[in-house]
Length: 450
Image (cartoon, rainbow, N blue to C red; front, side, top):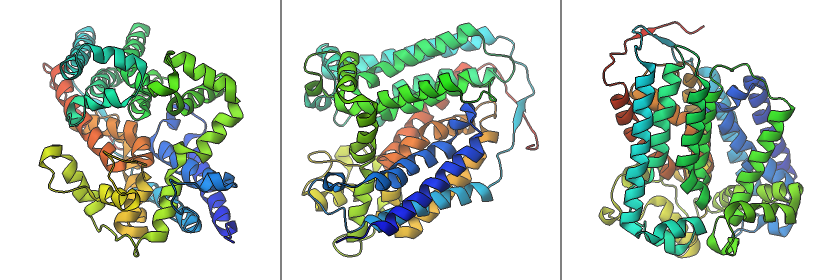
């Protein structure tokens, strides 16, 4: 008989630590809820705090036939280590230095026009590659949802091409954030931003790919709330957050073509919600695939040093280097693929592909020390975010914005792969931003942080 009481007490401690960090930092301000420190804590709390607290039945511990019971307590400790290290890194870091423009931008309309045209042009390039690789029928497959037939057309496609929709949106968002420090963002600009979000997020929405939708949504709300940083969460905004959470939670159940049974995505999502209700949808989030990373880590903690060996850099730094290589040039499987092969007999491309979360990646690479060091660094960088997001252009600004947008999906999912996606977004967005501001020499005057 397994005793989970220790693990559940520690999960409660993790939940309290993350929730207190979120409340103290955000002070219930919507803009602050988009901060990477908050989103990282929210992900850790849902996976390693709330999930183990509500796990009761044998089905809650199911993990593709593997033992996720023995390592329950140790998995919670790994998550708690990450949560505490994240807070400590944030506490010991100094804010990035704030900046202001010293040269006025003479033509705001020209800048926004360039950003708009470039963003749409990049989307057209992406659409052209879609049709080139999959033919005109690919658009019909896209409307039907995720399927093996759709995915087979894009195996081996460089991440740079897959990152184009997010890159195009971040170019326009970056332009508005920079100009928004000089004067209030107009209503028409906000409408253009929302329309561009719907355009660039539509393919990912049809496929139910939240790893792309979520970062883009964070960028959009950063722009919309830039002049309303003191706007606090109220009844209407709370309902909006609840609806958005429900939609994102329902997505995995209706994103495949088989799950939709020939009907469109909104109808399939509505039917799923009508059949299950709010309680079952949220319960499913906490005990099923959305937070199954806990079960992954629970299995790993009972096997590391026995059936599985630690990577000692091969699961983080070396895997990130391998991500830069075309699949045809990879000399061997990544460390994460080797872990999956030992677990299921085959790697991600041909078999089951659960994701370990950042806690899992750091743990199977360097154990508890890796988890503590990785999340301390994440907290340290998150403290720099506020000051650096005000830098008026260039690689540092694009990198900061992308870090804030992708932080949650990096902490939650296939972390190394998502870091590589974010790096490709930075490459394209930085190049695009240089084109948008090509005629302006933006000199920055450093200010002391107040």
